[in-house]
Amino acid sequence: MSLPAQDSDQLPEWRIAMIDLFVSGALLVGLPKSVGQIYGYLYSAQDPTPMDQIIAELGISKGSASQGLKFLRQLGAVKVQFILGDRRDHFIAEVKSKKLMGGFIREKLSPALEDGVDRIAHIRTLLTYDGLIKEPRHRDQVVKLETWQKKMKLALPIIQKLFGE
Amino acid sequence: MSLPAQDSDQLPEWRIAMIDLFVSGALLVGLPKSVGQIYGYLYSAQDPTPMDQIIAELGISKGSASQGLKFLRQLGAVKVQFILGDRRDHFIAEVKSKKLMGGFIREKLSPALEDGVDRIAHIRTLLTYDGLIKEPRHRDQVVKLETWQKKMKLALPIIQKLFGE
DNA sequence: CAAAAAGTTCAATTTAAAATGAACTTTTTG
DNA sequence: CAAAAAGTTCATTTTAAATTGAACTTTTTG
View 1 (cartoon, rainbow over the protein chains, first blue to last red):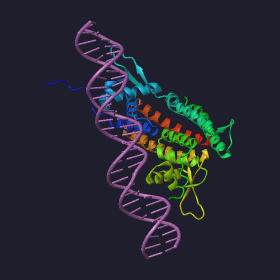
View 2 (cartoon, rainbow over the protein chains, first blue to last red):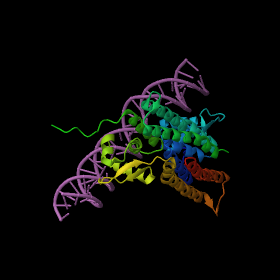
View 3 (cartoon, chains in turn yellow, orange, cyan, red):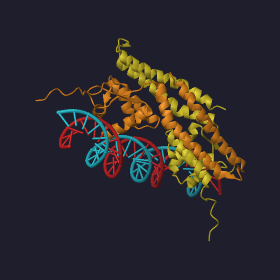
View 4 (cartoon, each protein chain N blue to C red):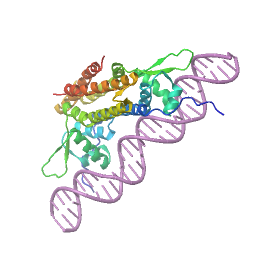
C-alpha cells in the first residue's frame, strides 16, 4: 500500500520542445547540452524549482545539475529565490535578453578576445627586429589580425545594446 | 645517396602561433580544429598552396584536409587559384572580414535561426486551442522567444555591416 | 552535537564529434 | 586507353568534452 506518488508525471510535450530549443541554442554557442536543458527547464517552469526536482524531471546527474546551475548563475541566466520554510535553493530563469547576452559576452566572448589580444602581441614580438616588422607581408598579416580584433571589440557593446531593453 | 629533401622544414614559430590563434577562434565558434589549422596555415602562407603540402606541413590526414578545404570554400574563406603547369588545386585564404563574417552568417547562423523559427512555430501550435494560447503565462513565454528571435534576425545584418569594408 | 539533508567536487566513464586512412571516383597525360 | 595523380567519401578509430556518481564538505535541525 502506497500513497499516490508525487506529481512526477512526464514533462508535457510543449515543455520538452522548449527545452530542446534551448539545448540547440546552447550547443550552437558551445555550451554543454545539460546547461541548455536546465535553462530550458527553468524557462518553461511555473515556479521556482529546487535542484532535486530538476534532476528528477530531466533525468540528469547531481553533478551535472550542480555544475550547470553554478555556471548559469555566474552568467546571470539563473537566480536563486528564497522560499520560506524550505532550506533548499530554488531556481528561476532570468529571461531579460540584455542580462543573458551581457553575461555571455562577459563570461565567454570578452575573455576569448583578451586571450586573442595577448596572442597577437606575442606574434608581433616574434616578427619584430629593432622595434619593427621588416617584412611588409608579415606586417600586413599582423595588422589585419589587429583590425579584426578591433572590429570585434567594437562589435560587442553594439550587440549588447541591440539586446538591451 | 639522396638529393636534398624538399624544403619541408618545420613551420617557423610565428606561423605556428598564427595557426594556433585561428585554431582557438575556430573552436570558439564551434568549428573543428583542423579547419582552424588549415585556414591559419593559408592565412600565414606566402603562396597558393596545394593540398598535399598542407597535409605534409600540418601533419593532418587527407580526409581532414579535403573536408576542411571543402567547408572553407563553401564559407568563402578559401579560394582556389589556378597555377599554370600544375594540375593540383592551389589554395589561398580570403582575408576580407566582410566575406568571412558573411560566409559564417550564411552557412551557420542563418540556418540555425531558421531552424529556431520552425521550432517556435511548433511550440506555438502545441499551446494553441481555438487559434490562441489561453494561458497568459504560456503566451508570455512564447512571445519572449519570438522577441529573441527577432532581435537575432535584426542583429545579423548589423553585425555583417560592422565587418564590411 | 549527532544525524540528515543539501550541495560540491573530481576521478572514472560515457558520449559525441573529429580525424584517420583505405577504397573509391575523377581527371590528366604519355 | 592504361597508369598515375588528385581528390572525395565514409566506416572505423581516436580524442576531447560532458556526464556520472561516490566521496566529501557544509548547513540545518531536533
